[in-house]
Amino acid sequence: MAEITRRKRIWGWYFFDWASQPYNTLLLTFIFGPYFAQTATNALVEGGMDLSAAKAQAQAYWGYGLALAGIAIAILAPILGAVADSSGRRMPWIWLFSAMYVIGAGALWWTAPGDFSFLWALFFFGVGLIGMEFATIFTNAYLPELHPDPNERGRISGDGWAFGYAGGVLALVAMIALFQSGANGRTMAGLTPLFGLDPATKADTRIVGPLAAIWYAVFMIPFFLYIRDTPKPGAVRYRVGKGLSDLARTLRNLPRHPSLLAYLGSSMFYRDALNGMYTFGGVYALGVLDWSIQEIGIFGILAAISGAVFCVLGGRIDRRVGPMPVIVACCVILILTAGLIISLGPNSVMGITLPEGSALPDILFYVSGASIGAAGGALQASSRNMLTRQGNPERMTEAFGLYALSGKATSFLAPALIGITSDLTGSQRLGITPVLGLFIIGLILLAWVKPKGDFAT
Image (spheres, rainbow, N blue to C red):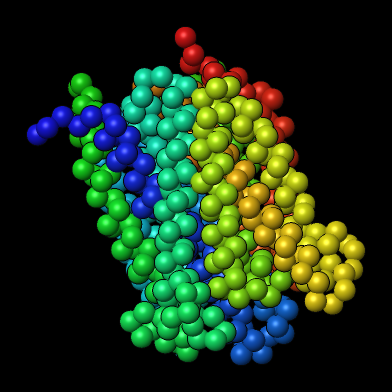
């Protein structure tokens, strides 16, 4: 077999971000998430619940479903990472979790309003989400092997995230231009939905699941062609006991690596807050600002484009000054953005009542979307590069497993807190407030993180 060049390996690695991004863009945030909220709300209203309470309850169900998936990821991520590092093999795990992604996404086709099941929708969405998250853990662990220069990894990580955003934009444009109908029964491109999909049964929206599944299956081909496991001398086949033993040793030694420990804690909170903003952004726009799913899709395109641009820019800044300044700046921007979003109502901004029909809340929400895309993308790209500086180079998959654990240890809290706050206040707008506190805690904990980590020589 011909030698796989570094350039091919890097581009193969980029294609995972391109292939997997639609789960976040199409399913989690801009299309299926709002569809779930809308369909669940209608089902609850038909069951006799007041409309306002039904909207808050639907948001709560979505939050609780995501919380359960987050708990499963938090428990299993470091264990599987440790087992993979002990064996030296990551690729079989990526195949397994890729299958979960495709099955979970594809099954969302069977969520029509006529026989809508909360449990069915959340279960298969969770299967796909778990598959996507675990595939990401094992894929991220290849980053240190792509280039020997730590400064270049910041650029590679940023470019990969930007490439993923570009894939998300293209998938979202395809969805709303070819399939998703508006109020006039036409797509954004003025077409009737392809394949005769019937808007009355929401087939034009439910197709988003199979679309994401097919997209992933096709665009993962370059990854599987060009990425290979690096042989590990003396490695044994998957020995769970050995992996657990190594993980236990790593956890016991964490206090000896205070920078890594502080970084895991910091990223646990700020990534959780960011995921909360991503997860509930479309649901918020639909319920609070009364946007259509097509309008939310346009909002998503704007956010993804700004994310792609600023991932590239952030990667270059990361290469020049390191990931820490990028992370701090992005957290500050996201704190301000979260405060702005919480202040928005259909006819008010920051408590100031606006004339009926004012477009200012919608305009500011578009601005917020661009800010979330820009700062959120750069934050995530620099965060995974920071982990390559904080983790043990010999146990990098395990380090990314711990990173996933830290991201998921409270990731069920953000959706749960949003769900509980929505329940208690009966308000979608106030239900988003927990993300502010999580961002602030994450920013404070960065004070104990060494920019080059504990393992720097």
